[in-house]
Amino acid sequence: MKLLSHLAERSDTLLRWLLIVLMALLLIDVSWQVLTRFILPKPSSFTEELARFLLIWIGLLGSAHAYRHKMHLGIDVFVRTMSSNKALVVSRFVQLITLAFALAVLVYGGSKLVLLAYHLEQKSAAMQINMGLVYLALPISGALFALFALEQMFAIPQSTEELV
Image 1 (tube, one colour):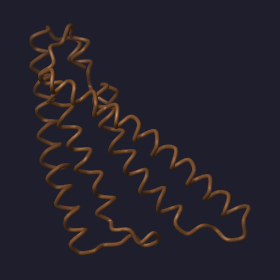
Image 2 (cartoon, rainbow, N blue to C red; image 1 turned 180 degrees about the horizontal axis):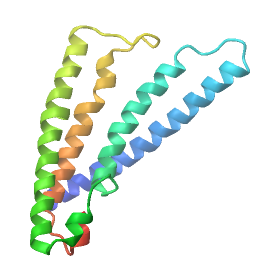
Image 3 (tube, helix red, strand yellow; image 1 turned 90 degrees about the horizontal axis):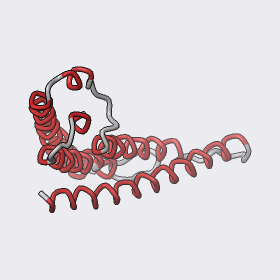
Image 4 (tube, helix red, strand yellow; image 1 turned 45 degrees about the vertical axis):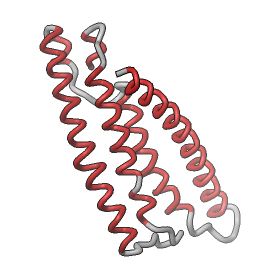
């Protein structure tokens, strides 16, 4: 339990810094795109595609970060009206469903998509990078979701507020 919590904390710290770097890259990329489009005579050809790929990574990894800190969208009005025992059962059920989705869809399905893109040597149009690198955000975010769901499943809540 303590090891799981420590691993989740370290992963979240790394994730937070990665998200900061990706957001900074997105800001630089979009600024460069605006500069080359409206000020310089020749617009940059790769900036739109890079911005799209960065948004994919930021969206998937950011959602895992939000999930850990319970900043995600959820219907918690029902859980708040339940007794502590019922709220705990509902919370554990939600964590279990999240874990199953993360492992089945994001990790397993995402890994198959990454392997397929590498096998078919699928390249992006402007940057000519293998699309498997872009799709790699799926299994990575899925692994983080699974880790954070396990952490929350085994955490001992102090109050009903911690469950939602």
